[in-house]
Image (cartoon, rainbow, N blue to C red; front, side):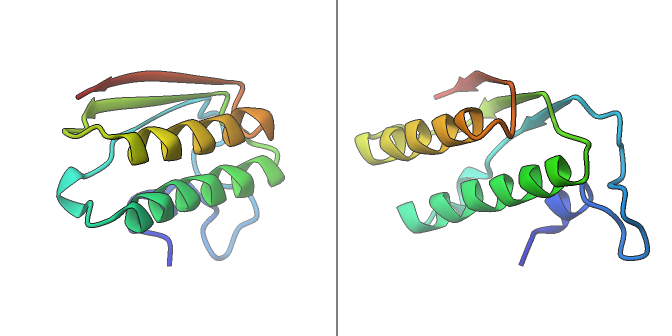
Length: 104
């Protein structure tokens, strides 16, 4: 299931075109209270990727993804997941630019 916050970026059920078709920059934060495991964190990234894929497939790709806010933790496992997922988004051309403005 896609959380409501991400679902809002997709096309309504009765439409092909996602809402905010001119959206070129997307800023996201991760709710650190929701972090229960690396699995949960990977799921968050996977859902974000799915939303970006669907927008791209609809012809309304997000050009810049900004990671913002206080993320509150940092460890080797999280850094590996971040590197893998961020590289995947850029390498798969789902976003042109990823800007990391997170505070730890």
